[in-house]
Structures are given as C-alpha cells and as structure tokens.
Length: 486
Ligand SMILES: Cc1cc2nc3c(=O)[nH]c(=O)nc-3n(C[C@H](O)[C@H](O)[C@H](O)COP(=O)(O)OP(=O)(O)OC[C@H]3O[C@@H](n4cnc5c(N)ncnc54)[C@H](O)[C@@H]3O)c2cc1C
Ligand SMILES: NC(=O)c1ccc[n+]([C@@H]2O[C@H](COP(=O)([O-])OP(=O)(O)OC[C@H]3O[C@@H](n4cnc5c(N)ncnc54)[C@H](O)[C@@H]3O)[C@@H](O)[C@H]2O)c1
Image (cartoon, rainbow, N blue to C red; front, side):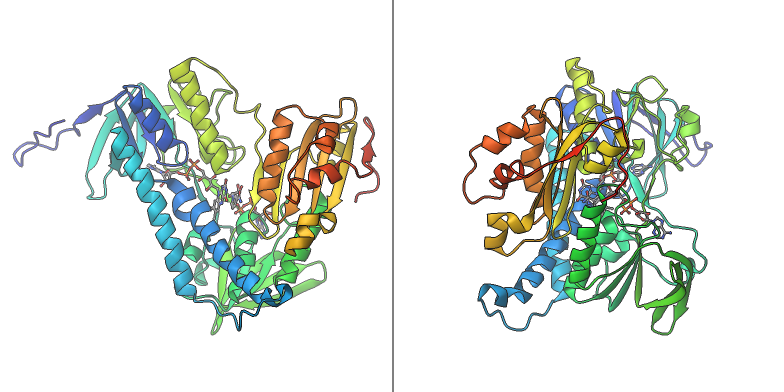
C-alpha cells in the first residue's frame, strides 16, 4: 500500500487495500473466524474499534465472573461458622477485587491478541464504516483513514448498553455495566434499573461486597422468561443476600442530590422516592449498527437495529455476513462463537447448518446459578405440548446438603410419548455445570429412564439425576392451556 500525497497536490482518495476477507469487530465470532480464514490461506484484515476480545473479554463475561468469584469468597467466608470454621470478621478490599479482575481481563485480552498475531491476521485498530457493499473506510485513532475492499465482509460489531429515555438521567452520572466495572470505590447505595442477567449478577456481587443494593424491574418478575417459580426462588435467594427486589416498578425521574441521586418510581402501591449513591442502568443492549453506514452497503436491519440474516447468517448482500449479538437472537458468547463455526464450515468445508435450528443454553451466574436449555414447563403449556415435568428441590440432593448449598431446584421436561428429554432448568450451586450434563443427554436423545438408571459417582450433583426422574412428574396434557399457574 502506498500514499503519494504531497503538500502541492490535493488530498488524493485514501490508498485502497484489497484483501480476501474483512472482519469488522474482534469479538467472540470475529477473532476465531479471522484466524480460521487466515489459516486457510486467505488474506484477512480484522478491524477493531476499541480492544481485541470484544465485550465478553473486556467488559462482559470475563470481568463479571472474576468479580463474582471474589464476591462468593466473601459470602462463604461470612458463612464459615455454619461449617464449623472461624474466619473472623470479613472485610472486602474493593480496589484489590478490581485489580484481580483487571489482571484476568488483561491476560485474556493479550491471549486473543497473541492468537491473532501468531496466525498472521492483519489487525487494524479503528472504527469501520461501509462506503459500499464490499467497501469499508476505517477511521484510525490518529484521525486519518484507510480504505479496504473485500469480496467477503463479516460484521461482528456486537452491542452496547441501552440507555432508557428517563427524565433527569443525563444529570446523575449514572453508570452502565462498563462504567460499574471501572469503579475505584465500592458504592454505598447502589440502585439498579433492570432485572435481567446484567442487573442480577451485579446486584448480588455488590451486595456481597457490602453495598446496599436495590433492583428495580418494570416487569412483574425478574428475568422476563422462564418458569415463574424458578424466578421466584431466585428472587428469594437475592433477597437473602440483602438485595431489595422491586418488580412492577417504573422509574419516572432521576435527580441529583447531595448524597448522590434520587429516583422517583411508581409501583403497585403508588409513587415513592428511592435514594442512592450510584445508579446502574442495565435495561438491555443496543446493536452497534447505527454508525456502520449499512445503507451504503445495502444491508438491512430490523426494528431493533439488528442485522437481518438468513439461515446461513448471510445478509441480503452477497458475501456480507453478520455474526453474534449484532444479528439479534440469543446474545451469548457461546452463540456468537457457534456463529463463527457455522460460517467457517460453510465457507471452508462446504457444510451448511442453520443458526436457527440450534438449542442454545444459558446460565445466569448468580448464586445459585440459573441455567436453562430447551423447553421449560411454561413453554410446554404455551405450546400445548404433552409432556411430563420432573422437579427435584435441591434440599433433597445429598451433595447439596453436604456442601450446605440447598437453595434451588432441578427440573426436566420430557416428551410424554417418547420419554425423551426436551429441556431442563437448574437453579443451584454450579447449576450451569449440571445443566451441561442434561444438555449432553438431550443432544444424545436420552430418555428419563436412561437417566433414572444411569450410574453417576456418589455423591456428585449429577447423581441427583437418578432421584430427579424418580419423582412423580406433573403431566402436561396436549391441546389445552393450563389454568392454574404455579
Ligand atoms: C456485563 C455483561 C456480562 C455478560 N456475561 C455473559 C456471560 O456470562 N456469558 C455469556 O455467554 N455472555 C455474556 N455476556 C454477553 C456476551 O458478552 C456477548 O453476547 C458477546 O460478547 C457477543 O459477542 P460478539 O462477538 O457478538 O460481539 P462483541 O464481543 O460485543 O464484540 C464486538 C466488537 O466489535 C467492535 N466494534 C463495534 N463497532 C465497530 C466498528 N464500527 N468498527 C470496528 N469494530 C467495532 C467492538 O469494539 C467489539 O470489540 C455478557 C455481557 C455483558 C454486557
Ligand atoms: N450470564 C449471561 O449469560 C449474561 C450475563 C449478562 C448479560 N448477558 C447478556 O447481555 C444482554 C443484556 O443483558 P441485560 O440484563 O442488560 O438485558 P435484558 O434485556 O436481558 O434484561 C433487561 C431487563 O430490564 C428490564 N427493563 C427494561 N427497561 C426498564 C426500565 N426502564 N426500568 C426497569 N426495568 C427495565 C426488562 O424488563 C428486562 O427484565 C442479554 O442479552 C444477556 O443475554 C448474559
């Protein structure tokens, strides 16, 4: 690439770099895809606006789960007496918690960077914008621009926190998830807007660090979807940790006060004012598509700004794909990573698989963890599908009693006619791991009888699957909606 501009000639159009593939965004799909295509002999340019690794590594999964680990240690140390252990007075060194988290993030990020370097991917730090269907201009940090063209373009630009239209919000120095992760000091009184995974994971962690935490969810329950009794049990667990959970509450106005801020809210019993030192806004995420010049490319978005794709993750423009959070649908790291596998297999191995056909599990990393895959009881009722629902409270699981972690339950939904597993929910300590056992059984087409009779090591959490399928199931008949919600 050359630049022959001189002071005596008018600025020429930026020199153009042509390559085989352009990857926009170094997230959970972009990084492995850039590596795989480079390994296959293609010339790939990966453009990243802020830092390699995307949301998950830098301001999502990695930092939150690292902080949650510190919070759990504080929690267990406070409970030490229950186990006959004297740990003394527990205090949390918040800057040390943050430093540990920053170290892990830096380690993961540099691992991603090293992987790209080793593979020989050309990484360009800058903000990409389409200028045509296969043409992209990148604004570099020094204010200059570079232009690129490629027959294949992969959009992996992810999403960012959504800011609601709340009067006064701009005056109160509210934080989003990224801002909260950067705090130097522990908030005294943390108000949280939203009752999704971001809100709940932070709520419990900060309560365990010693903050006074209130969660304000406008819906009638936490976590929007899933069986109601599970959401209620999770609410109880958070409450036991000292989190105040206010569902059915709408924030009306935010105001700055001497001590921090106030929020005027309307709940089932009328209006009231809440006071806090900090406000976390965690009401969802907005796809990074509005500043991508998608019009110039002819790439279409839906009403929420997510890029429209077909089964192959291809946009309406030939050779232009969208992967991960930017395409709508499940917004998890493992889903973005699987998008990479789908595109890789289609382009390099001639194998097609639709992203819509797959079952995506999820785990909310509260304590107890809430993990789910496939059909739950509520879903079976909504689909009027004949199933049997097995439920085992954790208080009946030997391992739970032995370890003092008896909160939660295990639930499995099986098809009435075949006895095959259709879905599972686990609310429990390490629930995500136990769910993975059920997930493998589901993928393998195993039945309730297989798991009832399976030999698992005693006394593991997985052994509870024997007992789960020995419970009397709730029979959900097909073709009729359930009248008595649990
Ligand atoms: C607080 C929090 C906790 C989370 N915890 C979990 C969890 O425990 N488990 C889980 O599965 N998921 C979790 N998630 C969700 C997960 O982080 C995302 O689903 C995942 O990172 C999406 O990956 P992606 O590849 O789609 O995009 P991202 O990882 O968001 O990467 C997109 C990249 O594109 C870059 N970019 C954006 N615009 C441009 C542009 N114009 N030009 C160049 N680059 C651009 C961004 O800087 C970013 O690096 C969490 C999210 C948050 C916010
Ligand atoms: N463990 C995990 O897998 C994990 C953890 C964190 C985030 N994530 C992902 O990140 C994304 C964002 O998570 P999130 O929790 O920010 O969003 P979310 O969309 O999952 O939940 C937002 C919640 O806020 C509520 N809400 C919306 N507007 C509100 C308002 N004005 N006042 C009060 N409540 C309001 C909604 O009813 C909803 O319950 C999700 O897609 C999630 O999958 C995943």
